[in-house]
Every structure is written in C-alpha cells, then in structure tokens.
Image (spheres, rainbow over the protein chains, first blue to last red):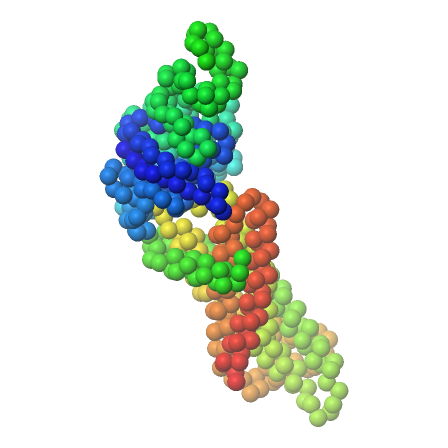
Length: 254
Length: 246
C-alpha cells in the first residue's frame, strides 16, 4: 500500500499539485487519469522521489519516504519497478542485459541464476528469442514488454507505469494492460498506472483517481466512472465518441 | 544561470559521483570499457596530431634559425621541450575535450532526456556514480599514457622530417633531443594531464547530466561542454604552469 498525504508542488510560481491525498491499494491496479498537464505525471514523480514535493508525505507500507536520506531511499527503491512512457531501456545494452541489470546491481545471485530469472521474466511477458537484440532492433510493443520484464525482475512490491499504452496500437495496448493486471495479482503488488486511455480504465481500473487542475477531483472504479455526476470527469471520459456510443447502448445517462 | 550556481551544482554532482560504487565488479567492467573507449579509441587521432606537430615544429624551428651562433641541435631540443612541456599535455587535452567531451555530454544528455537516468535512480542506483565515476577514473588513468605516447610520436615525427628533408642531420636532431634533459618536465606534463583528464570528463558529464529538453538541448549541452572544458583547460594550464615552473 502506498499512502500520499497532502502533496503539493509548484514550478516557477505555478501550482501544479494542490494538497493531494490518495491511498493506492495493494494487489490492485490503481489508475490515475486526467487530461494532459493535469499533474498526474508530477504526482507520480513526487511519489517515487524523482521530484521533491513542496509539502506532504509519501508512505510505502507505513515507511515515510519523503524525509528519508538517500541511502534509505535507495533501499525502498529496490522494491519499486517502473515502466516509463518512453520505456527508458538502456540502448547500449542488449535485451537480456537490460533485464539482468537490476539483478546484477542489487543481488548476489550467480550468473546462471540471473539468466534463469531473466528468461523467466521475458517468457512471462511473452518475449522469446530476442535476448541478444538491442532495444532499437525490436518494435515499440516489444520494448514495452522488455521494460515490464525489467521492472518485475526484482519481484517488486510496487509497480509504477507511466502511460504504458502510449504509441501502441489498440491490440498491443490490451496485451500490455492484461500483462500488468495479471502480474499485479501474481506478485500482490501495489500497481499505479498513469494513463488517459479509457480502454485501460474500463479493462483494468480497479481503483481510478481523476486528477484535474492539480487536485484529486474524483475517486472510484471503472463501473462507477460511467455513472458519474462529476461534470469535469464526465467531460474527460466522454470526450471519446466510442465511450458515448458505449454508454448510449447500455442506456446509461451521461 | 550564474557562474556561482553552476559551480554549486557541479560540486554537488561531483560529491555524488565520488561515492563508493554499488558493485565493484560492475565498476571494474565499466572502467575497462571506458579505458578502451576514451583512451584506446583516441590513440589514432592523437598519433596523427602528434606526428604532424613534431614535424611542423622541426621545419619551423629549422627555418627560423639564421644565426651561425645557434647550433643545429636546437631543432631537436625545441621539439622535445615543446612536445613535453606544452604540446603533448595541453594540445592533446584540447583535442580530447572536443572528441571525448562532446561524446560524454551527448551520451549522458541523451540518457537524461530519454529517462534512462531516472530509470537508474528508480532502481536504487546512484546514477552519477554509475555513469560518471568510471569515465573520470578511466581518463585520469589512461590519459598520462596517451600523453607519453604523444611525446614520443611527436619527436619521431620531427626525426622523420629531419631524415627525409635533410634540414637538420639526424645525429644533431638526436643530440638536441637528449641535450639537457630534465625528467621534471615529464612529471610536470603528467600532473597537468591528470588535471586535464578530470576537466574533460567531469565538465561534459555535468552538462550532460543536467540536460533538460530534447535533442536540441543535447546538442547545446555538447557544445557548451566543449567550450567550457577548453576554457577551463587553458585557465588551469596557466595556474599549474605558474605553480610548478616558477
């Protein structure tokens, strides 16, 4: 479980986040949705410590993260896996080396054990036969899967995914969503997904948090989102004509 | 950004860089890679430049000696002194600031804008130490050897020109190379080289590490890195020369 208390952040006098309180549940896929520029990525970066919030606290299973020194913070970070929007694979390393990197840095496993774990992770994300290729030699969807394999290689307690479907076709997006959802259940992780893909929200949104103008505007799940009376959320969700048609077919009122 | 702010940020980065590596095995692997990449990879350009520096100094010195009171071996003596005291350490450092400096700034800058550095941090790895420390250490180890090689190639370049053109006899050239040789000159060159090695790796790493934006920003960081490193090399060269030779 990750608990966020009263997080605020301003850049050059512009308030990006204002007093956000959220709890991300363990074993669930927690989705953060919101329009571009709403502050959801900044919230995630504050949560993992890539940006220092102006006020507020972040708790990882009751361990206060924001006030920790660098060393203690790095210990918690070994329990975090993150899937970046642009994948952030190390382009000078092969796929195999990318996935084994955290294991080499943080464990005392022998090389054959590491290789076994790497192959397991790659198979888990349905990737085989690409071990010795470089990230530039595989497709965007495959890169996403490699990034996911790397993120889970250390069996993390917490998984952060920043727009995991960006740049992917709808079919591949569904595969990635399902993989994240399945792996979350398997490892009992606290998974946080930043997205504005409504398909993902409907498919895997066990807990959905809507960020608007730097504030938590709404919280619920993928079922309650369709019947929301919140105007801003409604405008965001039903901006897509596909969603409108879906709701009309279900005879729900917008 | 003010100069003071740059110095502050640079100091913080260097303090973060010089911390114990997480895994010594990985550090050694990185170090060997950087020694090969930054050092051995620069051997070709250093050889070419040194050869022609020695050749040109030989021709220029020889053509400027008109007086019968100045012995012919002055040519060899001038080549040796120029190569050891200034050309090998300083000119090679300026060349490497361009070649190695732009490479480091763009490599680390690209890693920054493509979130690879963020990925390292999220994995609980000290990104500055992992990326920068092997580069600085490698340059400080390998560059003195490169400079010594440069000295020899420069003097060999002068010898070949002397032999090929006959502007000075090879015997006189060799005598000049050996005349009044003081080993302190070589120590002085090596001390300078170690300082320059730090400059040409640490400053580009700083510009790369704090790159913000996209590919344009990476290009700008690379240019700034080369310009700043070159200026700092010249400043430090002056200070060290004053401290060590006067």
